[in-house]
Length: 334
Ligand code: 5GP
Ligand code: MN
Image (cartoon, rainbow, N blue to C red):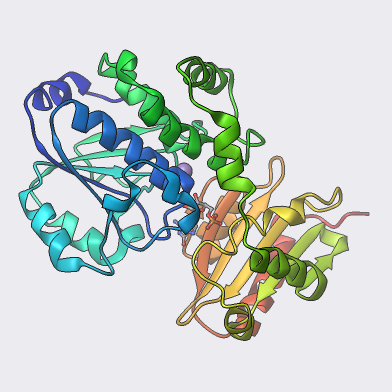
């Protein structure tokens, strides 16, 4: 529930200058929730600009109006124009301004009304209005709720629905994680109004370039280590892999999930050597919280079963550190 939503509703009763921002390396939920909310606000006669810190994967180009999204890394000055005149800034699918680097610093200094809509653990209290539900499958699900709270559920049309549905299927891994009866009711409504979910599944999941399938093969054949006694799987990509496979943003998305497909694996980690940092992407089954591991050791966070973090140092020392801390979180399997 959002406190004081009536005040926000009154503020939005007249056309406003609005900026929507989401996190770095935007995923389907970041893009889907931003575009879904953006289309709704435009229909309410607001002026809306969506700004992302960095570019999003090409696979989401099918989404309506995705080509109007501004990328802060590429056009910081143009972004400033919109940030300067913004009366309201919506922050979607992230829980603290340091998740969006320089853009966060800029937003922190703005007078605009700030609204956070998010489903990550431990939100920072920077916004004036907050809809933060850790139990929600996705921020896109929360955008559906938000529009409903404003009394406008009937305004959600198939175009907005496609955006929200995209966020829901990507963040739930096609309804495998974080589902609820409420989510299925929302999804049923989206189908009822005509969202073509089969088409979306094809766009998102059956559109892999051959190169990415080969990269997946490389990860599983050459870069995977299984620590059976702890039920842990590790995939590591080094900077040469990035060069040899010409890996771009989004190309490694989802690889970590393959580890959890093995019955004996309860924790999977994908460790990648980025230009200035080592990134870790973790997934777990059941009660094991990778959010805790990410927060305690890798300056990160996220969700209980899906979190990420980073490490400053060599790739080798990142792997060593990860292995060292395992006994603190996991008992040996007999
Ligand atoms: P992924 O592993 O797919 O990159 O991210 C999984 C989840 O963890 C996402 O919800 C993402 O927002 C969060 N996450 C990934 N990296 C970081 C990080 O460095 N810091 C924090 N706080 N969260 C992260
Ligand atoms: Mn999300």
